[in-house]
Amino acid sequence: MKELKAAVVGTGGAARLHAAAYAGGEQTRLVGVVSGDQARAEEFVAEFGGRGYRSVEEMLEKERPDVVSVATLEWDHEAPVLLALAAGSHVLCEKPMAHELAAGERIMAAARRAGRTLGVNFNYRSVPSHRLIEQELERGGFGRVGLFSAHMHAYLWPHLLDLLRYFFGDPEEVTAAMVDDQTLRPPVSGGPRGRAWEYGGSAQGELLYHPSVAVAATFRYAGFVATMSGSALAPLEQNFWSFALYGSGDALVVDRATRANLNGTAELGKIAERIAALPACSYEESFALSVGGFVEAVLAGKPAPVTGDDGLAEMRLDAAIVQAARTGRSVSFSHAA
Image 1 (cartoon, rainbow, N blue to C red):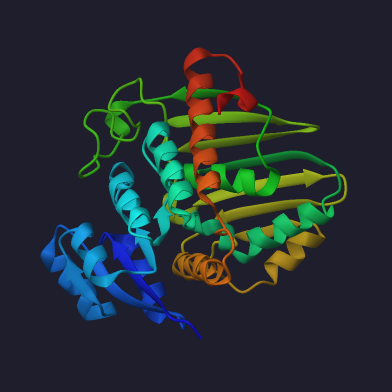
Image 2: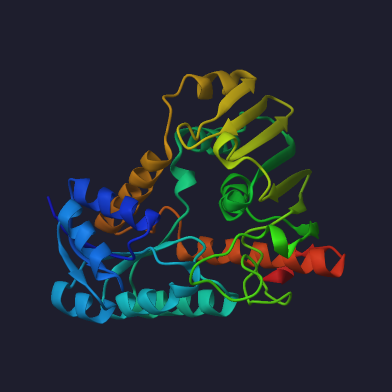
């Protein structure tokens, strides 16, 4: 059984979960951790193994890892991803893939040139209940879908955009409205100056990423409508997200997904009964499943469970929402890319 050498760039909360997944995996061994904070790197090495490095270049040269997780902040994704791809590593990048569309496009071009596997860690696709829902949608278990509606804490906004695409694919048209208040935006260490959550540092940022007061978007699909709303004022620990899915054959409400149980509380129909019977899936477990799925794909020579194309498509959908909210006009998503 082949063992992959793995490295992690970053030492934040997400990086810790990547490192734990590699260190605990049967087919991976953590060989390197990169951080500008030497003390943090040493903590990771003591806990998970490998060696600590101050630069991505040095780590790549000395360790030559098979897979690299880039778990820095979004505006620091591009450089380490490009370096790892150029060095011949497969890359799992934290979400969102980049802080601007141009950077996402450069990352995709580099992955194609390198011929390496590029994945994006939208870990909530790995939650068992979400896999079950996607399978039921694929086989027609909900019948004809009429409405999907979700609301969430702002932190989960990009994740739910990705889940929307996971369940239904890309919409045909997007409309949106947004209410913003700078005073309600928490500061982000190392982030762009000015508007902390909207990339670009000004009202002209092309991606929303984290709404502050409230944002709502409507997505028109062929034959049905989906809606999403998010706010930083939602109680995160009590409600990561809630959503409902209504079809001609079955209905489902998933209420109050939490860090301890991302399956949430499922009610209404037969599919809800199956979800309710699933074991709880925690936030930490979703990372282990997601990283494990990426490793399996690399070993099998298959595309990542969530590809770089998926990551770029999520960014483009976010940009279409921002455009629709600013202009007060619907945006044809087929042209937004």
